[in-house]
Length: 266
Image 1 (cartoon, helix red, strand yellow):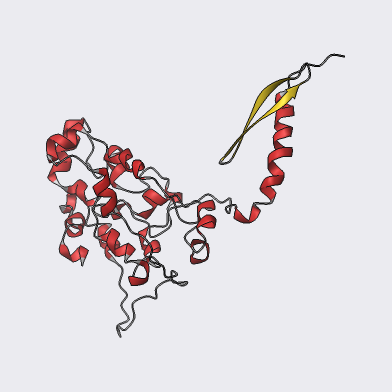
Image 2 (tube, rainbow, N blue to C red; image 1 turned 60 degrees about the vertical axis):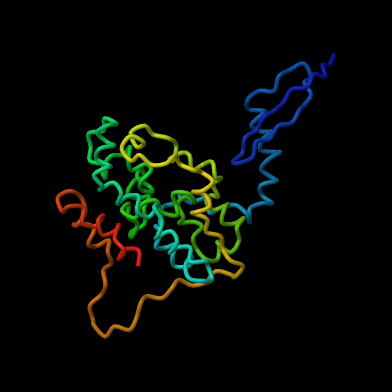
């Protein structure tokens, strides 16, 4: 019996790992089934040791910026939620009600209203392509580009317990994007340039403007309590309850106009 000690590279993909290693070839090629078995023998035991770091395995859904804001606001967290609320990202959906948005869609050959066009919503609203079941009750497209547009749907990592451990949070779906990822939406678009006539987008300047580092203090371990003090039995419904009817062209985009006011930014 002769043997041929040529080496071949086995390439196994398992989750985020891409494993490559050589094995000797004794005058036969390893079958697909053999490779799969070897993958289990090599990769699975190592993963058992990482079980504590793995995610929940559940399909994550979008929870909305208000959920993030329960912990990510106030001086201890660098006023992260309020910084977002004051940003152009928070007004991205409302911007679709501006006359310029209509002009851009016409130049682009889009026949739908900007606030309904998937082409526009893709960069102007978080989860615009998600199914209804993928959004927690209380999530609203009208809130524009929210936290989860960059950090991924948060149902599995948004709890304070998980967020205290960055590795555990990322294992449960938290994404930390690179600066270059901004160009997915902020790339040059001829229709936008013709209508808006703005100075060219500066990635470095924009990245600095949206920076929201967490100070050294630990985040709060419990959600912020509901506003109390009113003696009335009436309950506040919130602006999104108004937006259900007072949005869109039939009502003169009243919600979007409000979002652009100083009242919204107060």
